[in-house]
Image 1 (cartoon, rainbow, N blue to C red):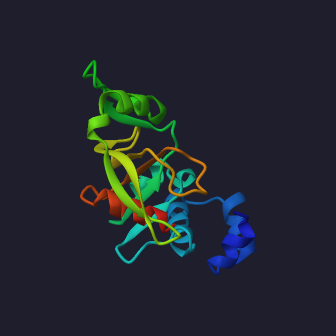
Image 2 (image 1 turned 90 degrees about the vertical axis):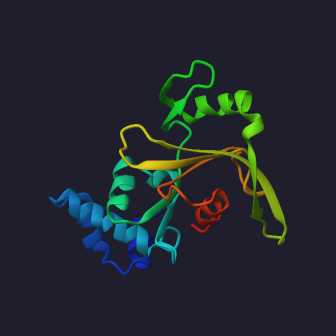
Image 3 (image 1 turned 135 degrees about the vertical axis):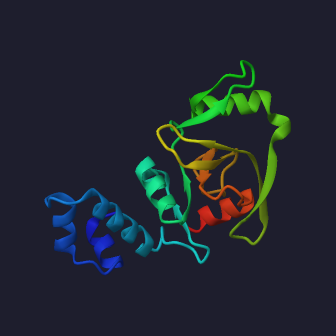
Length: 185
């Protein structure tokens, strides 16, 4: 998204924002505070009435996850397929960090009987049932515990991805609520 759009949508002076993001000597804590402020004021990333921040994969850094958690706000986000997730290998029983693209075939091979469905509302007012596999874990280099959800389907006919990996720092939120919250972004 262009910087001018962010400045316009968040009522922040464009030149001050540009200077701050590119040239200023700044406190990294203050930068994180401004990052959260920008996310909270942006229509596609603002918190919901439940205090949840929903973001796309490119926002989901370890620093953001831990910072949001430190503010007692829940984060629901998609992560990239190459993100390392702590996972128990079903055959070797070794617990280690594996990337999402390595976990997907293991789930398909060893846990197809554990896949569940969640109903996702569609534009035509019908529901689409998507298959998912969820577990609690952590991400590499991140101390905040997360709930990880592998969704084995497209959100809709216009979605270009067959698999989505969502996380949330809300460890008790239902998978359907996680998906619906994420889709609000």
